[in-house]
Length: 455
Image (tube, rainbow, N blue to C red; front, top):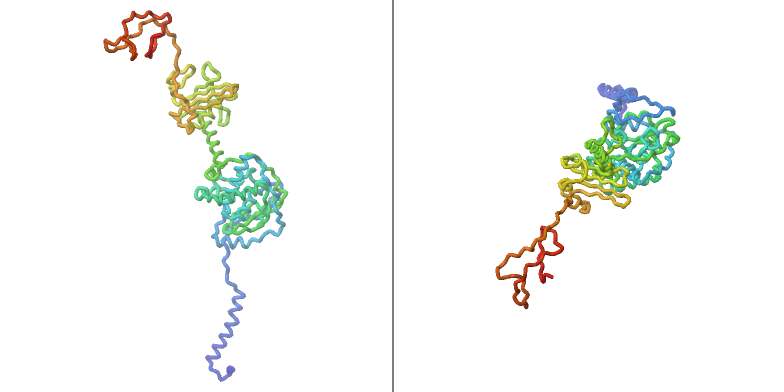
């Protein structure tokens, strides 16, 4: 058993024990009354929370982030509570556009979900729902591609970062990942709904804090993404009633991934090249502006024929487009084009040199059911040889003078051969000089050799 401290204990022992007892009481009391300072996230001044009234359309702010480290951003995001208001599922959306618009919308949505959420089915479905929510909200563009690539022309940033940060050129998905993303997009455009995010119109990863977050309600979390909707009336189902417009735009950035956008980009380039070619050909009035109709002047003396000099560098695939523009609604039209202005005629007839130098020709005869385009394959090779012109020379008809009867020339040969002998024939006897024919033959550049009798 331990011995009690008495007056006979050493003085030093009593001092040590007394000090220990005082520290055991004072230190906990000091910790309780003076807790250590916990570092808080460094937050600059953020916009005050504001509920936009129904009479005012809420602004769509560009994506700008508060300057925080990923750890500080996660701590701040964790401190923001989820909204305790109802979070109803969005109504199904069904795309009603035509085939070309649907193909472009599908590939735009597929690119959006894949580059924003990665090859993750649930994350892709959540992003697709946000896109469709924006599509039906009056604060955003009216097409699927317009929503996803909103802001790509601005220096302040896109609504979806992949559209501006060069991700489309830095990384290309595998065929399987692209197919899965297109499947998610197809289902979403056919009415599939991802219920957890409700009517969310915004989202971000939990390691960043955008400035717009202060004005929205946090409604859901899907993996590392947090989803938000506008506060007040603009975040309720009643605000998501806008009709979608037709005419999905062509996104040239998607051409490497999407056949639909590749074709559309090619057509857009063709239209631009046609306008440029028309300007180079002097076919746009001086006071005209881009987009106005282009007029072509027919050749002299024939309102249905056009002789045109093609501008340098114009793609051969665009020749038929220019020809169709020149011919307009004519039932009969002949369009001929040259690359050399010196050989371009002003009117018919054409010289042999002009015919040989022709670069392209187009013939339309609707009454006969004829429409033909031909290229000079010596100048512009074509994969289909049926599109090549036949090399031809125009012959000019000239009067032929009446021929004068002449005696048939005597073939040169040994002196003792007076004709053609048969094997069983006796030697030929000298004959009289033949009489001129009553029907003289015209002079010819070619000669015939008759074998057999002269009858």
